[in-house]
Length: 438
Image (cartoon, rainbow, N blue to C red; front, side, top):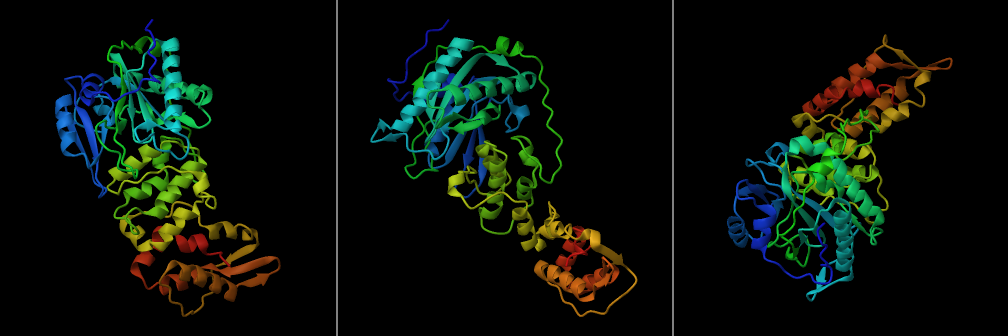
């Protein structure tokens, strides 16, 4: 049994070279450095030695740089590029707004809470699994706890078991640690392709631009998890099949949501960071209690859009709640873009829900025609003219309201003077969906 090292009262800066040499590099595989430029551009560089990594970092300190915590057998960002599991890393941070870690060189009370949590994590890992802490890195306003492994586990064979085991540790820490009410371990760091802030670089997201530092290092660990994971039964992950409307998403299926997939349809109109679309996605994630904010932010930036944090603190948006209408309204407001990119309305319109209130009273009539002088150039006009037509020409027969649907479809179709609007209405079957609107 390893002897636990008390580090909480003796943190100090350690050599970046020693960290990269012993924790990140194996001398054979590739290490990814991912660069996030202020312009929103993203680039990946690949190195095999700690010396080359540090030379590159020294020349590019003005760029926000992240490092892949597991080596790649080939240059690439995807799961299949990861050679094996080298590091178990826990991202320890505040559950809400993250204060500064150091003021005038001294750790703040927030930093001490993080260290107490890592101290508890270190003891739990040693007592339960005989695994010792290898390094602590300040990420800017959080800390990363590294447990470097001696056995090389193939990612494909252990992916599901590892995620299950990793999440069980996070759940324990997030409910049992002495600071669990305010400090958490982010479960999304179980991802083998995970990139985290590179020691020796500045975190430019915060006003003070804190330097990412190695504040604890133990290169004499002999951590092994193969036997631990082999004791787990084979676990098959089968995501629930969900209907699109009103569905509930998890950390994997969120990338199939319309609120995320809209970012794939470039170029997107609006501001450079598209606040409306990002807010819709953040509200959806908040509704479903998802925590993979950084992964979502990076996936959006990989689609060629500027990087922006996707964290959501409900108290910052007390008047906002998720609604399918957020994305629907964006698409309706930008129907020309939707026509050009092929992005269809993802959800039922509010007006379609209104029709349900009286649909049983409607009796479609397709025989009669009317000559109507209409001119439609946008979506509000479309809705207004459908309502006006039905309210002008509807006829009551007993308990039924008789609507002239064929005449409506002909009149409205001929009245649309904007070719892209006509294509949008056709692609989304809008006249048929709204023909009973009054």
